[in-house]
Length: 340
Image (tube, rainbow, N blue to C red; front, top):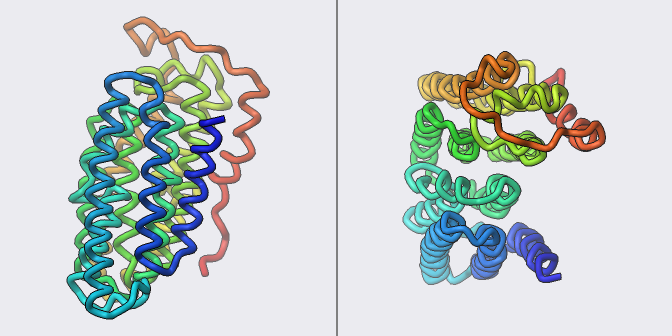
């Protein structure tokens, strides 16, 4: 019963934050959202989970302080708490830093890999997807008042560090965390020029990440070594996982390629071709570790691929696999024929 009430609070706080038009109400809803997710992070009663919950709380509390400072300063300067009245450069930049800290972008990204690694797969799913909706909605509302140069720098740094950080990871949750950082870079980089493209990118990422984490949870897969023995458990789930990873990396003609193509088109339209080229180069870093994971998943079969003991896992039944198959297939092959 208590878990259900906390989950309802998590959902309601996000909905109220996205529907609010006052910075004070948005701050209150984000605080409620933070307090609602903490019991899920620390539920396992493991020292690593407690550490992850502490890091998450401290980071979110710092971001909330910055958000309240920016909102209060803006209300003092303009006489209103309205989100659309962020004409001052200092307050809008401070608000951007606060909201990007909540989502996990460079340079305030260090908490995300550690928190995801200390959480369960389902909790990591919530942090990677649901917890980004409210801050992203607030960024969308104030996108007209964000400094374009600062947003472009944040986006490029996030795509670069997200790609480099995921290169040497053997833990899938940390790898997905760095993938999230890189994806947030793609979202922020076009936030001031085409906010709708940013929203398309973040929601496409959520659609692709959700079945990926659910498949990891169903197959008890947490490391790259576990990936090498996943085929013998469920070939169908393994194939779907490989397609989801490639789609998240942005490999055409899969779904994840569409928002990246739209963002590239917008950057070139704004005469930012050098920046678009650098961003495309950084996406190759993300593609490299996704290709490595896909190779381990589909092209290696036990026992020749693993010299150590094989992880015990419950055999996947056909019914369990079919639960996620429609969602995963739709999210992987949703690539439209025409780009608006």
